View 1 (tube, rainbow over the protein chains, first blue to last red):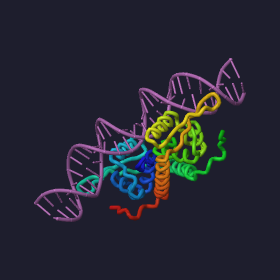
View 2: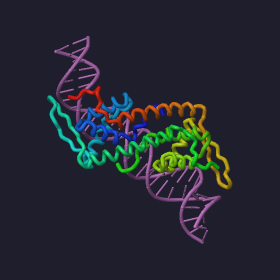
View 3: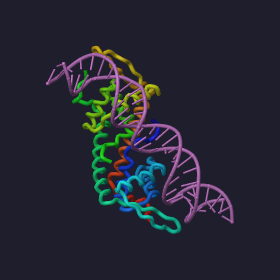
Length: 116
Length: 116
DNA sequence: ATTAATACATCGAATTTCAATGTATTGCAT
DNA sequence: ATGCAATACATTGAAATTCGATGTATTAAT
């Protein structure tokens, strides 16, 4: 394992956090923020991003609105009421995950475990 | 997203940490330790575990030895010299990952980013 | 005597993510 | 003025990862 594959499994949750933080944002901006927050490590590709956004919209977690920006258009996404619930649930799970990961990193031989 | 899917993408790295910490361990024990460290959250299924261990062995990261235990047998795995390098690299990447994840959780509106 | 736990394994399906490709506009540098 | 990089959307097929089911066998507990 050479690359930073660790984000796999967290991307959806991270997007929800980014969208909540932004209030309203669009696809390309999300890729840029992901890059910024991760110091260049998390490159969310289009093939990952757009289908995911579409899925979340189909699930009623996101709603979108296409707005013109100069001569091109941006598709802005925000959390629905339902999506806000999902986001805060997701945030709690993320925090749990982080705490548990710490357990693995502090490599203390596990006491409770009986070695035969 | 209802479940704890966050571990996807980190399983291989966590296994390397667990094996390093144990010195020598076997498949079933790894599933138990993963459960214990994650407070019951991370259930590594057999369909995930065994092919992964086999892959890591094929890559020269792990080496195995089947030892009888009573009337049945356990297949013990340990890191090779090469595997030890992988494990410490992996640990560094994991730490990086955790630090970056903190950035996402502390939801501070990102300053460096220009909003139009 | 039956069930749960221990211990290995494989296989096909589902899910997730990537890489490539496509279209179009805008900004910058030469 | 021309071409390239960046912005902005999207789809598609392939690759990789993980799950769930299934299989075999031993041991421990009820």
